[in-house]
Image: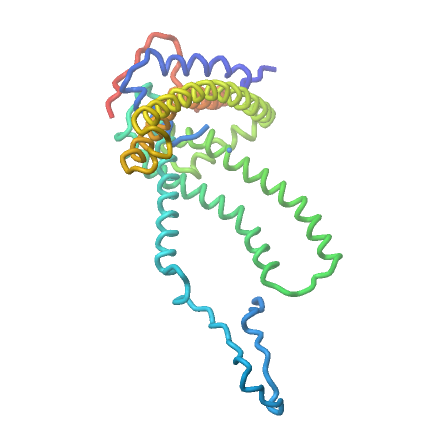
Length: 347
């Protein structure tokens, strides 16, 4: 029996090599932009409300004794920070995070388009795929909410109730959670990984939505469960090997960049300002040190991007190779025969 999860390893290498070579500056810059955003499945009792009342027949306290100072009731006005400002900041952060996630889904679809057509463009495919990206983002958000909501509800119920459920019910709940939580998490991972790695390229290939993509891919998944089981294992081992190799390369490169940045910083700080303390004591010195640190970090990011582009392209090519081997009608990668060059790469 042929295991196409294994056979696709070499096919993905050929596909990635054909897609990335020869190196074109504009093409790689657009891929770098994509790589920046796309990655490789009852109420409680208040302590202040418990005030102690003094009986009416209690003798008067001596005049020399200081009166009891009652702590002020908590209020929104007493907070050190304006709660409206806090809410606005939190809302802004949430909107930025959601916007970045939506951008990531959009560029994921753009990359699939690029792999299918061997043409790296950004604006045109992004406009065309934005509606699909919104539906894909909404679907994943709904899956996350559906997975997390039961735990939030149960946790909130436990935190807010003061009813003693007893040791027997508590033990039964713990045992039930020990079974339900892992199964729920496995189901969540399966849905998210299948959606990301297979349903999304089906959406690109068929110009359909998430549900339609699931309907198209579900018979393929159900017919080849053993094949996709092997795929999960091979995919994990590939990512593990890639992560180890990438980490080793990055440690070496970042070590070299960090050493060069440190030497340049020391030369500037000692030669111009006479020492780090003297440099940080002046505004100009602080700015110079900040610029050196910023340039070092930017250089590290720039150097790491080509590695991330290669890894991202290979992993996507491997997943698409498995999809095409599972169902030839769902083959998104073009046939690698070396006869076709890269088409236009305008944005």
